Amino acid sequence: MIRLTMLSATFTAALLYAMIALSSYDGVSAVSVKSMKKVIPLLKQQDEYTPLIFFTVPKGTMPASDKMEKIVSAVEKEMNVKVQRFDVLRDRMSRKLYEKIIEGEIGDRERMFPMLYHRESRQKVFGLSDPERVKSWAKGRWLPPDETVASSFKGKSAAGEQF
Image (cartoon, rainbow, N blue to C red; front, side):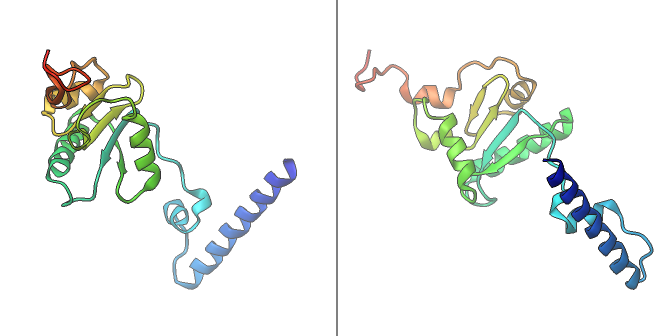
């Protein structure tokens, strides 16, 4: 284990030395840490943890997702929080995580997208929602049941008959 650590440290030092040596040929006297992180993927830092997740699709694919993106961006700026975005159409692992989270939900699958999920409070916001509800979700407060999902099954039993 120690040998592997020493080997990776030696490798990193050699890469840094090579970058500094190469940068001096371009007329640049010093290499910034930021530019090194772009070139050397080993030095990239992981994103900070955030309990807030936004499952979305690429811009222009779904109007509800585009509107929700604007609301989430405004809440991020207003509350100074970071919301992690997962694109379910481009990333299959994001799609699997989305499916795992909504696994036990009852309702119309089309109305369950886009979705906001709070990891710590396990609160979900489905579809297009108002900014006040998104702010409450971002704070981790308890949210009443979402009307968009509940309205599709209001007054019906599991067999589909009226009560």
